[in-house]
Amino acid sequence: MRVGEIWQPLRDAAFEGLVDLFFPPHCLLCQDPLDVPLQRPLYCATCLPRVVPGLEGCCFRCGIKLPYRIDGDRHVPLVHRSQTGQGCPDCRRRKWAFDRTVAVGSYEGLWREHVYRLKRPYHSADAFQAGKLLGERLLQTEWWSDYQLLVPLPIHWRRHFVRGFNQAERIAAGIATVLPLPVVAQALQARRYTRKQGTLAATARQANVQQALRHGPAAARLQGQNVIVVDDVFTTGSTANAAAKWCRQAGARRVAVAVVARAGRF
Ligand SMILES: [Zn+2]
Ligand SMILES: [Zn+2]
Image (cartoon, rainbow, N blue to C red; front, side, top):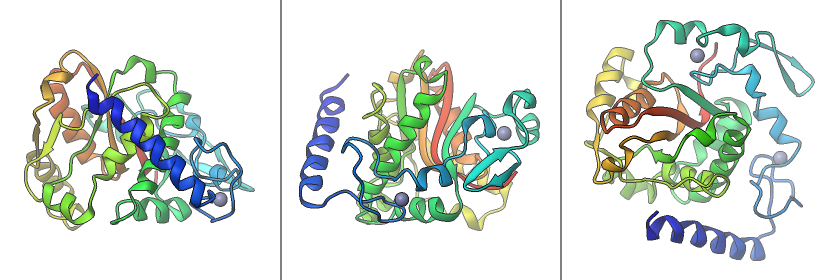
């Protein structure tokens, strides 16, 4: 563990304490005042069940919410994930380089608005809070303790310059307040300024994303480790898959993916 890996969580905690002192905490989704312990993620008990489906209702491989029906505010799964064998039908067709995916919620409604906001300039605190929630989500899985490192998806320095922060790094820092895993920010680097993924077809997107990453100076730390790749949104999976391939090339044994939102419908 390096100095930065100890210092950053301490700095985050100190900064949060200061902010809470002057701005009493509010739910980040509905703005209602919160009286939860300050170290908890800033989301209220009314909003959370609306945005976070049960893990048993999501594909363990790609994180997508399986068919469900709405019962009041609850999402009741119609297919239990244990019945889906190798994952959802889409996962059975794909050769993912990662073993599993966990997402806080679907990229829809209130959660979508929040996740969209957290990569805008001056919103790094939102990314950090969403990361805490993702940490709690990982804690619910039976597998997180098999993994040793958190690897945030890199963004190109130009995008970093405009935004002021890398949202995946802030999300990973949030996870690290819940789980005792170091964040290795320099394992992967963004090679060039990629076109916005939404404007490309699926096959072009895959090639574009694979070439847009490379190993960073800390890639050697992945050797022999099980790593969790951290990003904001999982859409087609091409970004997560490319990152997982680079991690495996650096010697990672197993790769899991943790995201704050899973886009797409089953
Ligand atoms: Zn709320
Ligand atoms: Zn799946």
